[in-house]
Image (cartoon, rainbow, N blue to C red; front, side, top):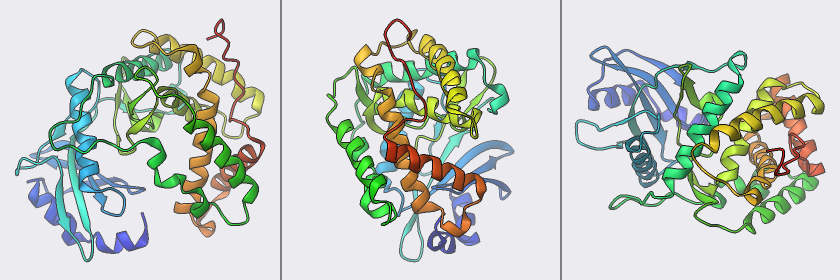
Length: 333
């Protein structure tokens, strides 16, 4: 979290939020990268409180995210329910010095965090099945009354590449801009494009052995369904073989994608043309992550692991390569 935001998120602010939601005074901090996340308690029952600064999201954006979550929950997707505040609101606003903090309250997801040791064909199939179901049901979603539609992928602040990429990285910037141009040329149809989570990696769900329970819909936007497949593939490969060779990554990616798509196809159909865009979206994730690191992690705060990741990303961007090489022939996937 930026220092300017941390200064304004005081103990008094937290207490005011807890009082408004009639929560117990004890809590546990879970994260603070783009939002503050806390495990909180209401009469001893664990729930999840998320606090967002107005520099990150507007109230309208948050309300639209929660409207879609409520829709998906109503369709039987395994995601945490949204709790209304005692005032009957999905989002409560709290004024700070010269800005606003927004609070939302969620059910705590069942299951357990996923580690690399938990990776298996069974998990990958379940992961694909839930993703496919989300894609299928979102085709019928219409925002509720007075709900502002979520933005499209190209409205992402991180795509202001000229602003976030270091000035000396001219080669990476030029290559990245070409990839974004290529994505922008893709056709948008109801069967290829819709409202997506956009970040269903293993850190954004819990697993109970039978299904996954997805959370953190903060980055939800209208994007290509193939991107929602590329993201799990990207992060799973990176987690399993962070320091691995290209051959190790390629072998893992083949097994992951085979199992994931088996599950996905139980719920939704994606054309061969759409599937063949997955490498393009792997490149897009590199491009956006390079902007994230430039925006969020100053050079002096980068440890060896982070620097290794940044260096690999930059090299791939400049070479116009994806994190893995995929043969997406119809007879193989």
